[in-house]
Length: 200
Image (tube, rainbow, N blue to C red; front, side, top):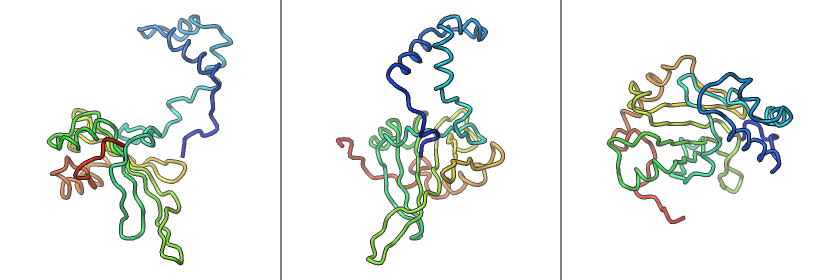
């Protein structure tokens, strides 16, 4: 479910990009100045293989999609109404907060991601994930998302990762109201485990 699964870099190309990044100035100089810090050939190679941040799906409220969550700890596995299967992941910030039972408030920088699939049951009663439905993000930034209890919500649907919502305020009516009602005691998070196995 990567945005650009065909984008693969060789060790040589990665080295070129690293050299380019190290050459970037601390200030916002014109692009021509930046180009002079590496050869024209290296710059062209970097540009050819660079995945622009503009190509990454972004929610109307500024939450960006990222594949990073696939390497995070799984917080919970659950189903909903026997129709969907859900896997919830958390980054180190939220994992540490849950382990310490620090819910009021959960620290800024915490990110929770829930991946959702259709639930499929075969003739033997075995359940497995079917068609991918969406991936949902909650990003904690108390200052940026003060109208939604400090959480930035986002949902990216289908394999094309289409962002949900038409305006930055979509989460005020469609997301946080339910989280306020049902999950205030756990920092507005659903499916929080009592304890996390941090040894695995």
